[in-house]
Length: 186
Length: 259
Image 1 (cartoon, rainbow over the protein chains, first blue to last red):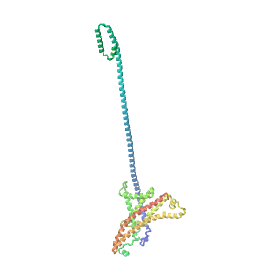
Image 2 (image 1 turned 60 degrees about the vertical axis):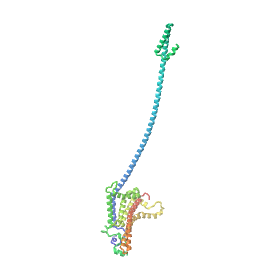
Image 3 (image 1 turned 90 degrees about the vertical axis):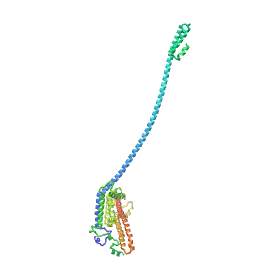
């Protein structure tokens, strides 16, 4: 090869041994430095970037999922609240109806009770009046009869006067129509 | 005619193998090729160390460029070929890819105009590292015996066929792979440089002609030279990628559980 380098002729298929040495040393140096100082950091950076991107994506997906979950939750809550409100409204309506019915029933009952009581007291009063009148009428009739018998029958004019006075006293006593019948019969 | 022109213009026509061996700058250790390799190493060191001096989660411009290369090899080659287990090889493959790509691109950089990989010594070094790497990975994972058995013996084949298949498998896995890896890169860069030489030097030769028609036709040679330069850029990227993909693929066969 050295002879060839002298100038005669070169065979391009045969390597020049000095170039083999130069190539080995220089390339080894290149590989050593880059593999020691650059490539590990490049791979680390590569991984970090992949992680950063994937982490970001994951975070975004997680946030999306969280948001969706919350939305569902809110929707469910809203629906729940709506049904509850509807239920409360229905209940209130039903309650109001019941109360109204109760009040009506009570009022009716009360009015009936009042009417019945009024009737009863009226009846009682009427009966006491009738009883009193009967008793009074008896005494009055006896009184009148004794007076009529006691006075002289001849004295027509005085008798008539006695009757008049009796009637007047009756009126002043304030007895009503109840005393009429016994008066007429006697 | 060409002989006369060479004499007249002192142009090295036609291009020959000797064009790939410029006289050394200072002895066999300091040649254009050696210097170019050192320059490539220095440029890559400066680029990556600067880009990753202060790495941040949101990358700057330079850091983003460095990470794009790493990401391409990590996800596009290492993980694609070897699965998640291959990511630990991504750093080496990235360095390998960057180095081959840069040295390949030297072939079309004005002033350098030739790729160090057109000297077979450099592809041999790179292929040898890939070779040792995938052998070591295979032996470490399976043990020497199992690894050899896996590499040489195809399962489900009638036994007499092994007399034929074992040598073929051996040749394929342990000889062809590193040799083709080195030669493919070397030959592409060698041929690319030769093509560029043919069109540019040829263009100058035509321009120097006394014949007006040939003089004018030199324009097409220069146009083709420009076109070929772009083509060479494509080849430079493609060959760097192919080298790395094949290395990753060989590593994946060493890592594989099944044959």
